[in-house]
Amino acid sequence: MSDRVQPPFDGVVYQIYPRSFRDTDGDGVGDLEGIRRHLDHLAWLGVDAVWLSPIYRSPMADFGYDVADHTDVDPLFGTLEDADRLIAEAHERGLQVWLDFVPNHTSDQHPWFQASRSSRDDPKRSWYVWRDPAPDGGPPNNWMAHFPPDRPAWTYDEPTGQYYLHQFLPQQPDVDWDEPELAAAMHDVLRFWLERGVDGFRADVVHLIGRDPDYPDDPEHLLPAGRAGYHDHPRTLEHLRGIRAVMEAHGGLMVGEVNLPDPSRVAAHVGPEALHLGFYFGLIGAPWDAAAWREVIGDADAAFLAQGAWPTWVLGNHDSPRPRTRFGGSEARARSAAVVLLTLRGVPFVYAGDELGLEDAEVPDDRVVDPGGRDGCRAPLPWVPDEGHGWAGEPWLPFAPDAAARAVAVQRDDPSSVLHLHRRLLAHRRDSPALVRGDQGLLDLHPEVLAFHRTFAADERLVLCNLGDDDLEVDLPDPANDPGAPWTIAVASDGAGEGATFSGRLARDHAVVLAPGSGSR
Ligand code: NOJ
Image 1: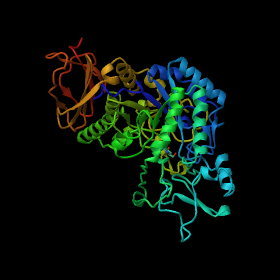
Image 2: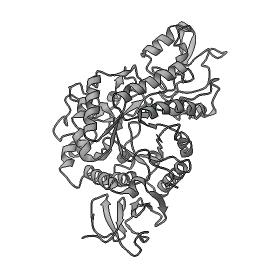
Image 3: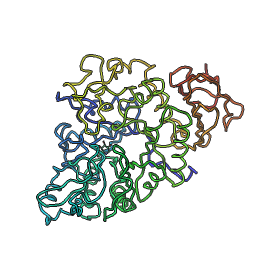
């Protein structure tokens, strides 16, 4: 199958949440200069692209996912000149720069919305979704906002006597892509950044931009509080066609956050006239359990490939507890999960800080700032062990536990660190066509072991991860291209035995990448 599906991108994407990366000007919030100063580090690590969560002007009600000016940088992060410099210096190091594109909504402070709400006759009225109240005076339909909890997705605007739609905060009004002028303005935003040298975008909740113009009640939105409804309307595909045409004209790539639970519905948004890639979040929801991982990986891989789409894999992001925290604080499991992430068929996304094995920060109630309660995974990165960990000012959130021991400088000096494991995995992946673009088959070697085989022409790898409670022995199949030959440990989650012939013994919570051949030691 995969000989028909070409990966649109060969590399690994590193997600930076700019507020939390590195502060250089002393306001406690990370900035573009902080990212620029660490480009050499990212090149050393071996990632291929950095995706920056929103850097645009914003009142920060949703920390940048409420954009007030799409074509300027928020002063918290720097200036347009800083962005230009960052892009140029990243390119000098062979790193791509991807920005976040927020197509579903803007800030209520955006001039487009300010005009839209000013009067029913304003030419931009139709750029947003305004509807009359229901006969009882309530919201036009039953949709609930994703957050804050228990809030309708509509807010009444007294001066013009209508409700506006916001599937997130009231400060994030939804735009209407059925309005051609709005679509054209959004296309211009993409062009603006592509012309500045940006290589790609991550499109925020892009599955929400196509909607039934009648806005009927939606049974999905009747889920209990705290569980958001899922939109999946075919008009999204029409809007994606226009977006893709802009990307094609400039040679940019787009990965969409298609936050739907069914991987075949994610894959349906990927294609030559749609997204290049679509996020699939199944691994974020999977417990530490071999059967669960096999099911998530097998189902998603099959669903993507069946539709000619190259998969993506995500273990962490700025919206979810970090993998190490989800796996009970176990560094061994976080390491093994990274081995799987970086060897599966598909484009891997590494969330900054996961390569340090960070846990979520414990954020006291009086320091919680996110309306969605996602503060813990947004803790600042520790760069050095000393007090302040390299941050110029007191950071906007507390550091994660063990920040001194987990600091970048400490881990760079320690070849056995989680950071070095990531570096070895990234280097190994880059040199293996089987891992970058090969076929993949799940193997049933042991009930507690996730095992998959990757092949591309003569290159092959076998990946094993023990998700059980015990150390165990596995019987391995022969290498396909070299029957009878043993397997060598190319990368081990704990670094042990790399370069040696694999014995078949795999400790609990451990993972290995194996290559055919007898070990040199
Ligand atoms: C998804 C983003 O990842 C999240 O951080 C944000 O709050 C929502 N979309 C709304 O933009």
